[in-house]
Amino acid sequence: MAADKDDELTEDWDPSDPRSMADYPAIHEEMRAHAPVAWSGKWGGFFTLMAYADVVEASRDPERFTASRMTVIPASPRKGLPRLPLQKDPPESERYRKGLNPFFRENRIRRFEPDLHRIADELFDVLMQTPDRADFSGQFAGPFTQQALGLLLGLDDHETKEIGQLSHAYVEAVQKEDIASAGALSQKVDGFAIDLVADRMRELRNPQEDIVSGLLDTPPPDRPFDAEELAGMVRLMLIGGHIVPRNFLCSVAWHMASHPEHLARWRNDPLVKKTLIDELFRFYSANQALVRVATRDTEIGGRQIPSGCPVALNFLSANRDETEFDRPMEFLPDRSPNRHIAFGIGPHMCLGLSLAKLETRIVLDCLAAAPGLAVADTPKWAKWTEYGVTALTLDLRSKKR
Image 1: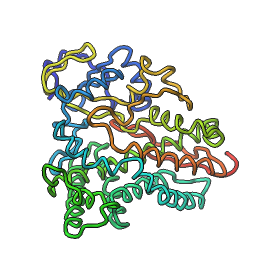
Image 2: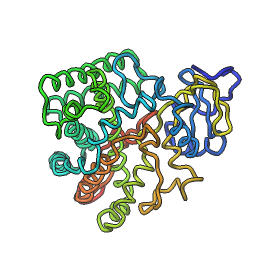
Image 3: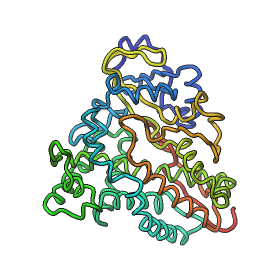
């Protein structure tokens, strides 16, 4: 639903405009100065919160800004499985988060480290077969995050490959606004999740290594999760656990290839490693924005929002807000403190932080060990609502071109 009297509203920005897509952070900087609650008439009309304080406020107030009606804009296909817990507000969402939390704790994620190192080393060996034209996005970042998701969910090799292909095609269709194809692919992803749950319900696997089996083995105290709830939780992870991390790791590789001084810091200064990873999250927030819907006429950032209007929470802009961060448009490897919200904040904060940190550390170690590192071709960048590099070719030879 657009804002009331949207014909009277001044267009502040258009995230699909070529000028915006050419440099989202620069456009966000303009909006924070002149329209921190920015109106766009695109896709039926919506507001975007650009300021850190406003994004945090809305994220923590599901009574005013609900996730139950819309989470992205343009809207993805809504028929089929719910994306749980993302599309539920507290207290309903807490039931699902409590069930999932044990599988995302740092000590559990750490168990995947040997396997993730092995996978990364094998994939990097493939890259080194064509070091001057290494397809980092297609031959490393994509397969690495795909197999990491497989480990997390307990998928076998066939399942991992199948959902990797489906999720890539689905996100590509959404970005092209090909609603018909996106809807058909969404149904296939739903079907994958439903079949996966049915398989585990027929024959439980190791609950310590398989999330669905674990959720079945340790049900909530009120009542067990039913098949649709389990499939809805899987459905959310199948897309969010692969495509967004892939883009982020491509951004990491592009940054290090473009800033050899930062790669040298990673290689030679153990004390900088934690802060550098956090700064990468802040600077390259791969989920540029998620959407909520105003539940009533309300005000935020000094602007009136009518009931039913979509409101995008722009994490990428918030993470470069000059009122929160010193020199926000600069990448500072030793930035501390760093209160970035790349994984959101509040009741819908992403569960995948520990896995993302581990993946990033492993990939940085691979890049640091390469004979050389340079960008070999013009990278391709993601469009709204994502951010970061989606296609990247590297030169890994000992000498730069």
